[in-house]
Image (tube, rainbow, N blue to C red; front, side):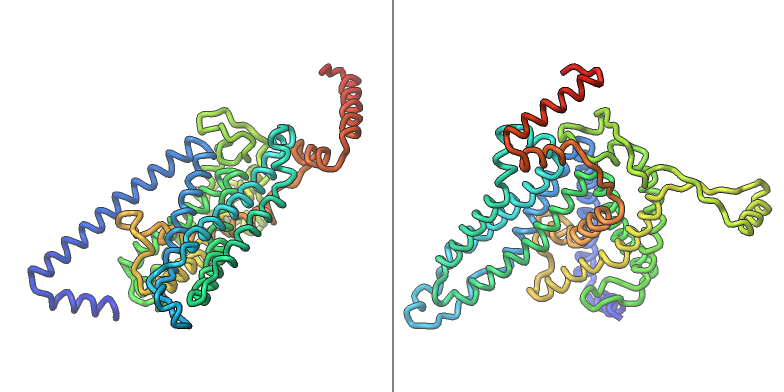
Length: 419
């Protein structure tokens, strides 16, 4: 019905206006397509340059999204509760933006610090200059947050109270949905680029195929929050994403650069990266059920007893299902958000695509799911040099550390290794 109404409306337009509308529509499509390729090219270039550039990219996207979301809340509309405040009605609270970005900086300091300490224990617990940071990171983070909290309380003003407390809640909600989510995405990068690149690709693939199937055969509206979404596009994108995930993920799992966890932020696609692969990337053979084996052998004219596969392919199916059935609800959530504020896009930072939030709404949800799924079901937990160093530095006195060093030196000398 909406598509039919739009077509009837376009038919009723005068020829000049109709031609202008079609020209504008073609221009928007060209702009959107051009910037799509620019973003894809830039993304691939940064990925080849190294993990640190991907982390910077996530940080940049997170910053833009946070700015767009927090900009929706302002203190312009003031309901003064006394005649004394009437004179200051036109003024804005000077602390609003300052506190926005202060809490953002503190949250990033805490979360990125946690990631650095966890993934680079072998560096921070050896370097004398970084050791105080590692040992006192959480108390420093809490102190910084407390300073911000006290600053907020001191900035409270009569006439602004309701909006100021609303801003305080709004900022913390934004930190939870945006900054914390991006922290998990960064952790995915540090666990191996494939845990970031492939899930992100599946969301993009699903979005593209939902648009393609919706434009070609879409007739039935899917959800009122997004009138352009159709059931046909939703279902078609599901099967397309499922097939795409198996081919895409199986191809990129062949490269050590994609599957190896990060131990050195200086590596790039041209570095000689080597690691013992996670068992999910090791090829195995599935023994075919006997009746099915006979049937396949007769149909294909040759004996087939096993089918090669990697466990990662089973996980790819799970990622594809989530990217197709759950991640789009991040987009629906964003659509409801925009309707609540009566805006078309969150911003105009990407020509033809709106704001960064319009492109990242599903990615945050997918990134969090990937990290939780990976850390719960896939990650291998081993004793590492970094974890031992952390226990030694934080749990032993200086004399005990010297004693441990001497004992370890004697042990190595007994094995014929000279320090």
